[in-house]
Length: 328
View 1 (cartoon, rainbow, N blue to C red):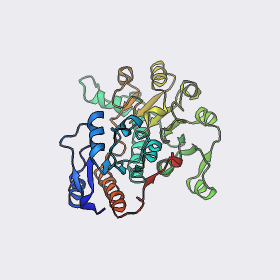
View 2 (cartoon, rainbow, N blue to C red; view 1 turned 90 degrees about the vertical axis):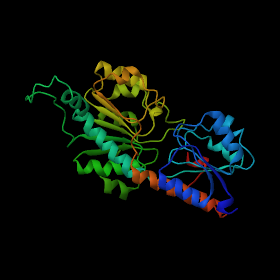
View 3 (cartoon, rainbow, N blue to C red; view 1 turned 120 degrees about the vertical axis):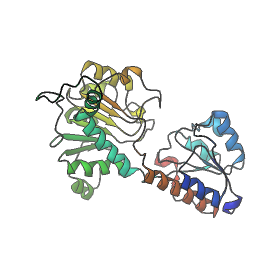
View 4 (cartoon, rainbow, N blue to C red; view 1 turned 180 degrees about the vertical axis):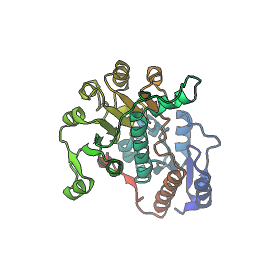
C-alpha cells in the first residue's frame, strides 16, 4: 500500500513541521485540539485507521484493541516508552507496534542533572524566597545546600539514558554506581568509570543520589518500595525522570515529610498528572510536569522517526523501530 492511500490517525497535536510532513505523505487525520482522546474516541479511531500515531496518554489495552478494525496494522507510537500499549495483544491481533527510541536520551539526561542540582542546591526553595517579600538579604548560613562533586550517584537502569547520565555526572566529579538487569560490557564500564552492584539494596544504601532510569514493566512496578526507601541515607536524594510507577509514591511522600530522605526531584508520577497534594506541599520536593524530553529538537526528531516507521511499513518492510514483546 502506498503512503497516500494509507489512512493515518494522529491522537494528539504534534509540532507543526511534523504534522505538515505527515499531511504531505499520507491520508492523515490530525487532532483538532491538544486534549487526549477518550477511550471511545480512541476505539473509533482504531476502527477506521490503517495506522494509529499514539502517545503516552493513550491507554491501548486489550479491551481497546478488541474494538480495533481489520484495517489497523500499525500503532506508530510517538515516544520511546510503550508501557501504555498491550504489545502482546496487539501482536496477537496482527497489529505491529513501533516506537521512537534513542531520540530523548540527551534531553532526558540533561533534565536528570538539572534535577540533581536543583534538589541538592535547594533551588526551588530559593526561588520562592527570592520571589516573595520575605528575603532579608544574604546570610552565611542561609539556604545551605550540598556540593555534588565527590558524591556517589546510583543509576537504576543503565540503558541509553542511564549511560548519558553517567557521562554527565563524571564531568561534575561524581562517583558513578549502577544497577541493571545485565552488567555492562567491561569496555563500557571502564569508559564510564562505573561500579556495578548486583544487589540493588546494597547500592541504594550507599549512594548519595539515586536516579531512576529504568522503564516501567511488571517487574519494575514499585521496585523502589517502602523497604528500599528506608535503606537510603537520611541525607540522600532521589530523582525520577523515567516512570512514576517505579517508586511507591505514598511511601516516598511519608519519608520526605518525616525528613528520612533529604529531597526528591520528580518529573513523573505514579498516577500520571494526578499528583499527591501532600507531595505538592513539600518544600524538599521539586516537581515538574513530565518535561524530561520536552525540547523542540527532540519532539521533531520523534516525529521524523514516526514518519520513517510508517513509510517503511507502507513500502512493505518491517518498521526499523518495531517493538516485540521479548524486548519488554
